[in-house]
Image 1 (cartoon, rainbow, N blue to C red):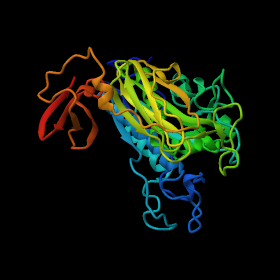
Image 2: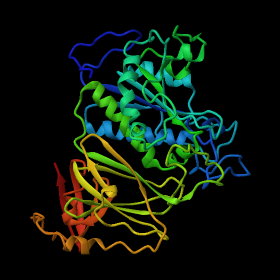
Image 3: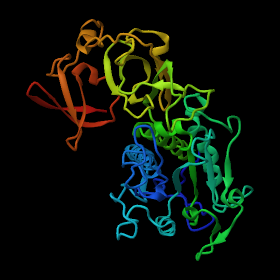
Length: 446
């Protein structure tokens, strides 16, 4: 890990390490729902005849990059240990019109972004993208690019940042949750000048290839996966799947600077059916060495219970043929999932395949298979909770098993659960407003 010292360490180019909190510049690549955002068809969001592109909920790299960066930034901000600047925090315009005055409102010129980076002088720059080959190709692996040659980076520490981030990024691939076609036992970290076999010099005298890296601050561009690997593209329609990639970047940055790591953990899983395959679907060519060929179960309900049997969260799988579900900010410990989907046998017993061990600052990954059959409704949460003993009583004025609604400081609904279950959710520290049966009171997490 890199320690932040009280003395500024001069670096090549125009940047230096921060005297206090590190400064991080976050660049979600592209921006706008335009042809430049590399739109591609998916099963649920095909190309529209009037535009030749999907609707704004379909696959655009600008969307997915933004989902990742916003989650990355949220986590760093919540630590209170970083200064952040974004090249953009929104997408648009819609409808996109070529030549309109707002055509590049969020799809900003790379030279403009690079100049802004030089002006901000961050200690860490990251530009998040996804890669492409021929659509339907089975290539899928990360690529990290810094400005310079393979032998030497143009800005000190840039290559080191890539090297330290690599194991955090490939975590899901190492877990066999995401398909990785190459670099399973090596890294794919390159200088942009050698990778593209071309060099140009900008007006400031910087030499390189990628325009967004033509500045004097340490950092890199990451192509996290190939969106032309079609199952991954369908996963990317789920913002929480993208957000987990952003969370892995946040963990890597926190480790690099040696600031306080997350004390909570996460779960990311998928629900599929082994009896049905994805053969015959358009826009879904998959590797036969993976689980990607089994039908993802759209609309499945996934309910999370802690070791004592209390329901702590619930997730509804989307209809985008990915089967993905995500639970975040969980206290370390043992959890089980209940699975429900119309047309499939309900799973709500404590079996090994539905068990997760959550660890601090880590994500647990698992694929779940459901058998075709009669779906039995999940046992209501209050009946499960009534059967649980030896749970410490709350001293709240609101009784433990009362349904409560929890709101954050901005008034946004955080969750609807029982008073007892709030203590197991692993919510971020802060003051919340708890409402139940006409009563309103503060709820504090330390």
